[in-house]
Image 1 (tube, rainbow, N blue to C red):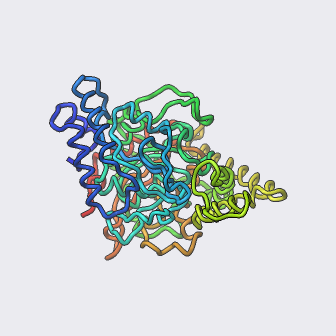
Image 2 (image 1 turned 60 degrees about the vertical axis):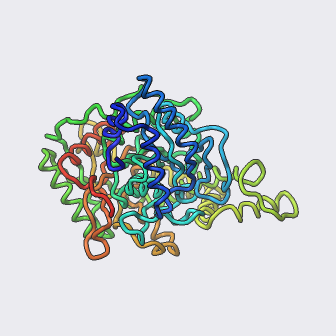
Image 3 (image 1 turned 90 degrees about the vertical axis):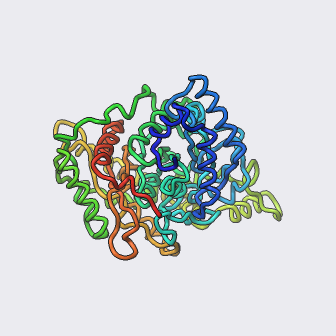
Length: 488
């Protein structure tokens, strides 16, 4: 049962072949037996109460396609009943009095919450090694990272501890762990998913999205989690849509842009080989490959690591030990309490980004760094528009690698922050432009160690083109079986 897709599980629930309570119990048992450290908080009683409510809806013919489906939430979405820590000591025992909008939407759809998933502290990281509660292990190879910051989400889906999970993507944190764990994940257009109740890292970049087994599953999840929210000032007013409406459309004549900048120095040969093979498969499906250029790609890392820390330093200023969060036990006065509480509550990477962000926003440096980075961000977005939009449009979608390498060993990059930052070189530009992008499994690395470490293919589209991306991914998954492979 744990190997079925969401569509298949829904059919089992609707036909009463299994109850929501039985299904939830099966996944809870798998979570309990797991040693991946993917979950931070599980409450069997709360989960089964939701499952019984879902069974009542199913019995009363008041069920939708997700009613009774178990789902786990990244520990960046606040939840009533379950702790929300953001992977930090700062919020070690915090329980929110309200649900994030995304959680509300899934509850309304009748899903059953399995628990909260481990993540890099405040979603800051590329390997899930920055969590205060220890790293998540990659289910394909437990000596490897699962990617970050949504490593718990990707690992849980890959290990079949949950059929689906919520995640967030600031600079690649849905796509990169999905790639390293061999599952499917999509970051929708910025503003499509409400950020209300999603603990903020970088407000102009953070975007929620789903991780699941297939593109079709991701479409079902997007149907539930997108929509306008007046409580989020960046939420877009757009009508609800069926993201799976295009599944089954032919790829004949589809133009796939292949950026030369995604295939240069730094890309591992085994990753390139898997991605090239996937592109060849798309040609068999009727698509045409078009060489394109995104010349500002190399600037995405310095731009991102100015803008994101600047916004983080502002957002994290609220964690001061006064209203909620960790408070130092011993202090002399208010200023001392602030200093000690934040020094004790935040990990090294969070402190590093707060310091960088405060510096680039300080008087005398704002124009030289932050303002300049925002200007270059606009140029990065223009590169994509030149390729995807207008009368001289070069392509319909863009494809390339998600990560320059397969998953690396736990501990390999913990002493080298820049090496961690470089792992996001192919995902940052999409986030800076606010475009939708996704990762689908397309192969494995080579060599004795890498042979069991997955490779992901990145698919990028124009704004609000998620339905096309999902169909492109779906057609590939109908022709290949990479998404069906499971860790031992």
